[in-house]
Image 1 (spheres, rainbow, N blue to C red):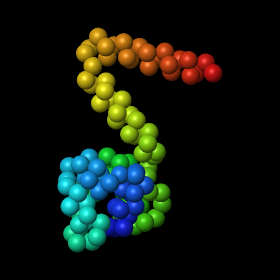
Image 2 (image 1 turned 180 degrees about the vertical axis):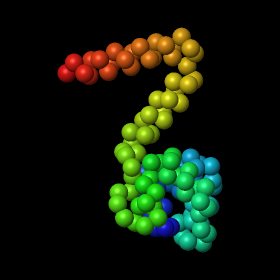
Image 3 (image 1 turned 45 degrees about the horizontal axis):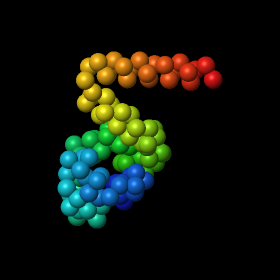
Length: 109
């Protein structure tokens, strides 16, 4: 499993530090897991699968696809939501209207 965790991190093009920070653990924890010095806890594995959309079956067995969806799309959505949450309510309303207009334009083409 340690090799598959490393494969996920590398597929996401993240350093051990960046990968760990998003998961709430240090670079040392990620390094120890990847080198098989410690076994990851179940809670860590579930959190990693949810956060990065990793296929749990693949993580456990190596069978199937690594990701449940496109992780780049997930990153974009998380970034958009993060920015949206920082906006004042009147700007949130404006941003939402603009997104709706963009969706309408896209559906016209």
